[in-house]
Image (cartoon, rainbow, N blue to C red; front, side, top):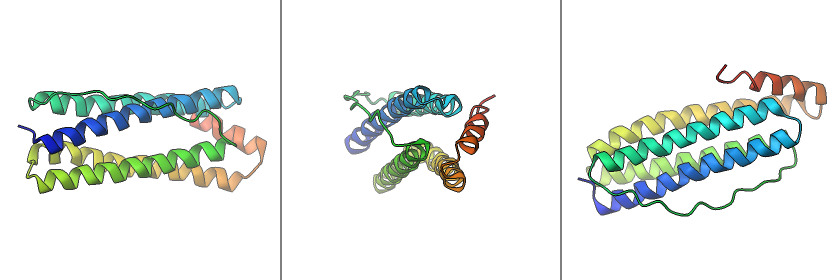
Length: 163
């Protein structure tokens, strides 16, 4: 059985995962509108991945007899300065999610909630990958600078995600 404290924290994390999905979908729309179809595809796939993360937590709560209480999702930003700006925001957001997962994991340790710790360990590992991927793209965009040709080549590369 979930403690009320862990249950509330898991519900908050579910909201954050849904927001992440919404954020990446908004970023996809920005990229699409700015002739970056590969980046738009990358963001759409990321949005779907975040939905699956929310559902993983949703199932965790339900399987343990808790009740999922969905909370409102804020409107994400819709405008960015450049592809680099978009991916810097991705990295910033993933660091925020990592901190949130770590806090939730620490709470589950404090509450001796071993089942939640097991589920959350998957998220801890996942966040290492999320930050690594975002960091690599940011660094690649920094390397190519304002070269439209290089940005377009990188965008084509990003289109291959999931293919």
